[in-house]
Length: 108
Image (cartoon, rainbow, N blue to C red; front, side):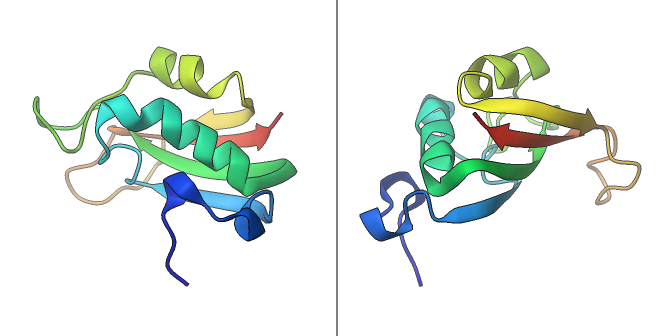
């Protein structure tokens, strides 16, 4: 099945228990971030969870990947999600060490 995440058909809305995010959020145009968060919230069932690996400190100024701070993540996600846990992964792909942040989120 192939669908546009930003425009899920009605039969896929509120139909997922989990979403896994890894490098999609950092690759989209930063102007699409609020739309991404809304799409993630729309895709999940009530109290659904999201396991996300965000790229916090990419080694580029112009992107992608596009940088984002923990504060910006909270501003975007907090209205729709509750932060359950977060950590910096102990292992990462070469070049990504200490540049990733894992967040476990639950839909509000």
